[in-house]
Image 1 (spheres, rainbow, N blue to C red):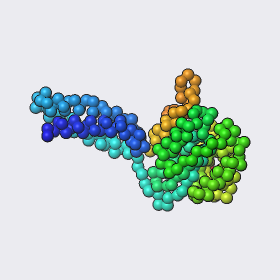
Image 2 (cartoon, rainbow, N blue to C red):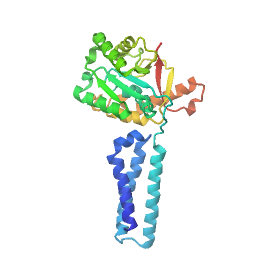
Image 3 (cartoon, helix red, strand yellow):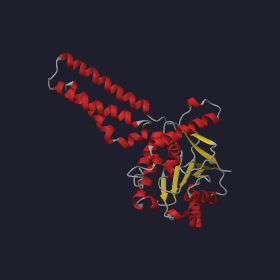
Image 4 (cartoon, rainbow, N blue to C red):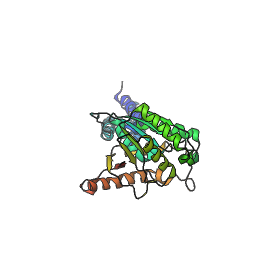
Length: 306
């Protein structure tokens, strides 16, 4: 077979994979978009060039140049994917983790990078969401988004309850019982939930319910949601440098949110806001540890519950 047909097939395969396999690759790469643009661009430009060369439309010199450029592009695509592949390391002592959120998008917004990194390190993560988010969209759609977002992050199981969205504090007993049952069945080593320093009343209610349900649990960590107040004082920092884009991709799954001001997404759900906060906490974490702020990476933060 003519080498040009083979090269055309290879660059087309890379281009199609980068488009058709976007969801999978977003979960595996630290920065997906540049690699996709590279692969698609190579397919659009070099596949037709090689097909033309295979049909005898080029001079021998142009054929050689086409082969060289295409081979270089293929190597470049492979290197780009390799350089952007998320680094995974198996934890020496995998833990069981339970993440508890009030609404279908809370875990992704507040702890998506942390949960994805923990999942990639071999920890077993289960999650519960206390409401279907009726006040923020179609509950049936949002339940599916919660499960899809959790699966994308690497969460083993996500259970969505139907406690009243705008009145979570009104069914404290029911939430405590649900959380107690989940703690009993999953036996987590660590529990993540909302902070007491959160101005959203539903988040605060879930925080209180978790503390009461886990009153004998030794490790409850409180994450920082977009509605956390200035009183939120992080003591635990998690390097999510490889997982910022994973977090952004998980947030994008939650598309059934009410729009904010003339067809615009809610500001706190934008990639710019999420990445900016991660870098801000990176500076904070670097300074807290005595390191230079200029060299800090994106971090997620949690409070240590007393």
